[in-house]
Length: 125
Image (cartoon, rainbow, N blue to C red; front, side, top):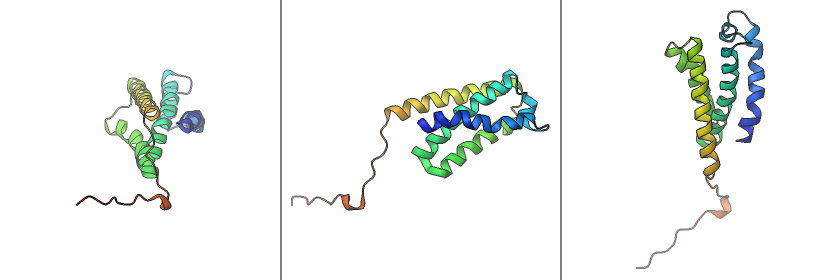
């Protein structure tokens, strides 16, 4: 969880050059705009979701799948207007809050050392 929170702003900064490259999705939003702010907030929230998928669900495949879905689903639905960017950011923030709550309240599955494999108990006949 801490990794997602710490790495989120770094990942948002990683995307900043895309706002300066003509023809990119981020450039069309504008760096100093509501769309730009929504994109940076959603990137930070997405980092939490990707971290959760990596640590608690399916490792690297889970992280890649969450990132892929985040990039693909809005495009498939034709969501390109400013309102959809804000909606996307709001949805990711809500999901991230839910994930943080679940993450904090659930325990990580226990792992066993090879020397601690439980032995079957003998039943009474």
